[in-house]
Length: 260
Image (cartoon, rainbow, N blue to C red; front, side):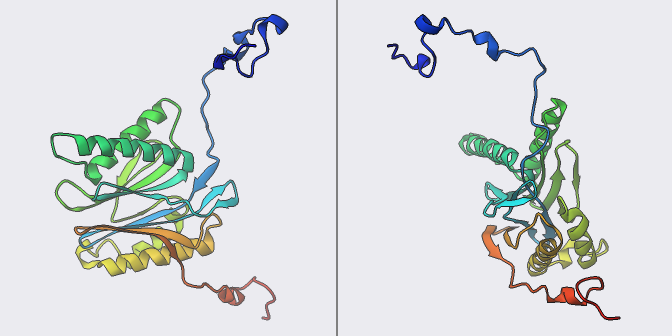
C-alpha cells in the first residue's frame, strides 16, 4: 500500500493503470466570477463640522434571501479612516485582508508617515481600476471616510469600475436613490459643513437607515455606525432601530381595505 500523501484518494496504479492528469487541463478561456452571490446593500455617510459619520446595516443577502444578519460592513483603517462596503461580501473580505496587510506594512515602516483617508481612497480606486481592466472586477462600491493630509474631513466614493467622486454626503446601493435626497434636504449645498454638528449628522444617518429599512427589501434594522473626528474613531456595530410600527401603512391609499 502506498502511504505517501500525494497518493491519498487516488486509485492504485498497479490495478487501475497510471493516472492521466490531462483530464484536469482545459483549453477554454480564463473565467472569473461575473455575478455576486452574497451582497450587502447601502452605505450612507455625511460630513460634519470636524469629522465624518458613516453607517451601514448588518445584513448580507444571498440573492433575495436575508441570509446573514451579523455582517459588519464598516472597516477601520488606522486611527483616522473608515471604509464602508457595499456589494459582494467575499470581495469585501478580500479587500479587508489587503488593507490589513498594508496597515501592518505602514506601521512597520521607517518613514513614519501613515496613510490617511485620501491616500487610502486613491489606492483603492487604483485597485478597482486594475481589476476592472483585467475583466475580473471587485464587485464593490465603497465609501472612504476620514481626514486628508491637511486634517480636513474627507469623504469619497469608488466603485467596481474605478470611478471616483466626492461630495458632502454620499450613499451606495439603493441609498443613492432614497438616502441622498433626504441628506440633500437636511443639508443643502448652500449650507456649509461648519454649520452641521455631529449630533445632526448622526441623527440624519439614523433617519436614512430607518427609511431604507422600510423601503429597501435588502436592508435590516440592525446597523453599524462610525464617527471619525479629531478625537479618533468611535464605532458602534450592534445598533438597533427603535421599535418600528407599520401602522402608518393603513393611511396609505391602496393598502388594505379603504373607504372613500
